[in-house]
Length: 209
Ligand code: GAR
Image (tube, rainbow, N blue to C red; front, side, top):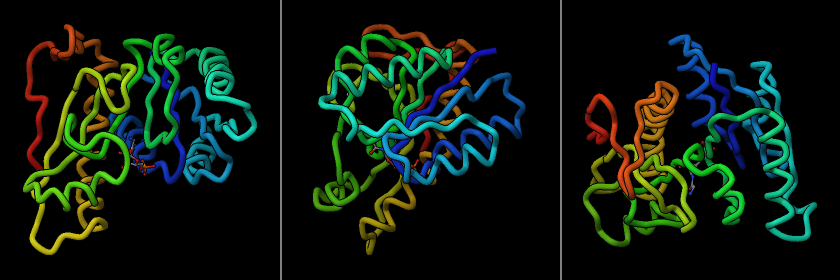
């Protein structure tokens, strides 16, 4: 049985959705732990309620990114992670961390990458006047919000949308695609070929929601 370690920074709604779907569909997976970079992260409470080991490793307690990431690596390795799931983890990771977990580190980003990497994606999408916005699940490589794309979901931008209404629609899409991407990984269906992720056997990796 494969083990997942999840990193969060806040609410943890993606994490919660993934755990609930895994439970409902009886995935053969162990949620070996959840780590937040501060103890107030809401998602830690859900983890505790499910008996999932929950840890806070406060980034403020470390003098630099390398030492914080070193502590994260140690904890994640001790938990025996086969897959590291970033679910709203709002820290930039060091190249050393990313190399350590290469090919088993995935992230969800609230935009149709490569459009709108970084923060405030919904505000920026509205400002740019795009008609479609969405979410991307990808393997993590060294650039910020970069790496081979596993799947994407798009939602229409509606007249009258504000950043909150758009964020809510995108979050719903995130909750639909992240479990798919993780299940594909667990089932050994993902092949990374250069900057592309092939799903075997093939199936659409794009969802219009
Ligand atoms: C999600 O919208 C996720 O895509 C975003 O943070 C939110 C976390 O929500 N992540 C990023 O912006 C990473 N670049 P959640 O804590 O409720 O899952």
